[in-house]
Amino acid sequence: MKLKKGDYIVTFSLVILSLLIAFLSGAFKEKVRGDTLVVELNGEIYAKYPLSEEKVFEIKTKEGWYNKIEIKSGYADMIESNCNDQICVNMKPIKDEGETIICLPHKMLLRVESEKDGKLDTVIY
Image (cartoon, rainbow, N blue to C red; front, side):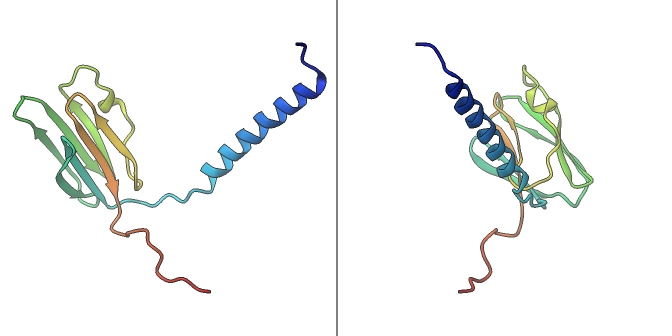
């Protein structure tokens, strides 16, 4: 089966439309600045820290693993870990609600949350 000129036009149009939808959905998404860092260990909340206070702290597990986390200028960053792959250390610092840093070998998750619950205040008809 040989492709015709119309097939190329339809394919090209669908690719452009898909890229446009992907761009617009990301461009209009409102980012909310987070104010709390939630640390989860083994799927359970380990601690919560305000992003407004600058600090460096270390989380150690009974297996001998550790992760060093820095909160500075409203950003949270994993600055040191004794895991093999070091992916968590190479991730960018997080500040916006929903952003995460994950250390899979240590089963640790850093997540930024906001005190605002994101629910509507009122509905107007």
